[in-house]
Image 1: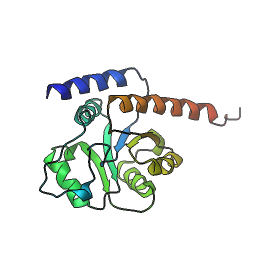
Image 2: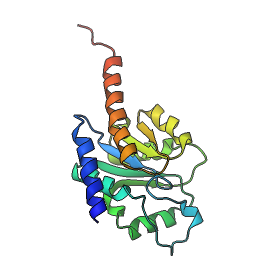
Image 3: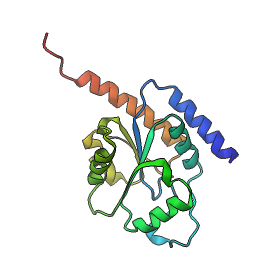
Length: 177
């Protein structure tokens, strides 16, 4: 638990630097929060998270930033069983776990419908580059992770989110006087 608290403290420190944070952070599951594909495992297996995942989730909760799941797992029953086994399922404001051969646009549309959070107030972490463009086109700030969500990738999230918010302010048409 000591490592979870250390990661949580570092994540809180990262977020403390930014004046503007997302209202909702969305995570993929496979190879983002945990180091495996659900469809290659059994419900009876004991799942594990990437080392920084739990601390980051707890930091977001402490900052009152909602979290959600957008997963294209073809085995949602295994995914939800693992979320329960890891005692993190209750942390998520929305869970969209269903297979599609397309990107995650429908996942984000459902999350938006359930939470009411605008796309441009969302931050997404995922390991599949094919899902980034669809989310980004909706206005979701998206971060590609290579070895699961960790403090390095997490730091990139609020940085890019702030840059996107600044850019959207600069690109807004001016109101006529």
